[in-house]
Length: 402
Image 1 (cartoon, rainbow, N blue to C red):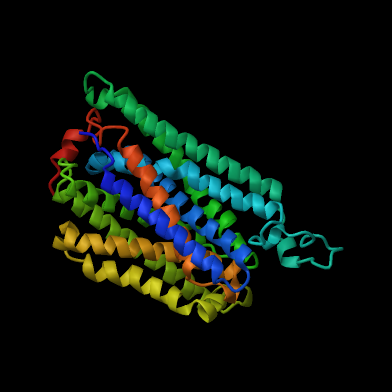
Image 2: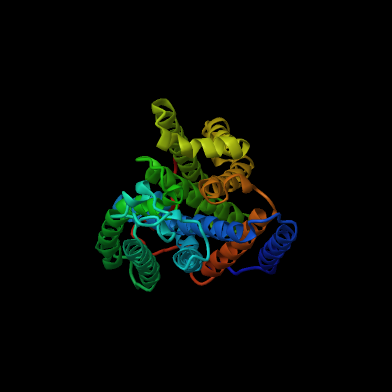
């Protein structure tokens, strides 16, 4: 059975974009300075947030092949659909990086002229000490490598999944597409294991260039992973409300709910571990990261942590709640928004300092990106059957019972 984008879905998507544009314009008209920097910062926030949803979906698809996971086969096409927005969000990221290189924005202080030149009045010894890694040729080489390799794998998995649909007979374990997918999954995860962290260092952590954390890469990874699972959970709920995804039963919802619960606990553990270790050691160049956030973004920062930890902990603790849409739907929506705010707080304190916040510009750009993301995802879903029926584990997944 295939999904056809309904007029109602198109109207909702367009409405999100229109409201986003209106909010964005209102924000521009009422802005009190630093507008240019704020626009660049928000472009980075949303480009990074929605790009990481796509790349985490690719990771989860690869993980399913490597682990020979059966339960996720019936939702595999949903993860693939979210990957369709990867080129658009990558373009937003590249625009920010080009802007930094050309000095159109000042998001990355280490890109500024003279900071690594001992003869310059802008010389910064700490930044100069990191120049072996933080220099523009190496940064651009890494960035292009990340994007090229990730998009190659995304295209490969999608293409081969559609090819598998054309097989006249299900060959079971001898399925050639399935065998190659396992090998490619291993290669991708080996590459992603390093680049998921290093890209977070390059694109996000280097904003606060004097600061570093050995846990930051894992923290960023857990955030992108939970956001991806939340999106797929919301897609499952939406499509089932249309009478589609009949192969997805309460056990699949239960498994998705367990993933939301588990990854939320991982994210909260990494958030607190990073904070606790830095707070306890009280090293000046490390605590500055938290001083900025506690001084100027305390409510958002602490509030986001509490919601992302306590909401799934108390609501999704029981088995029944993980199968019940009444609990899953509001939890997924709230957590999705809170993880976007988490990315917002990763970026704004280092770019806007005390002048940033959650205002009309932030909400507007988020809604614009969200509308485009939904549009691309639904269009991708409509281009292929929702079920990969020639997958060797399709029948096992369809009859899943936990």
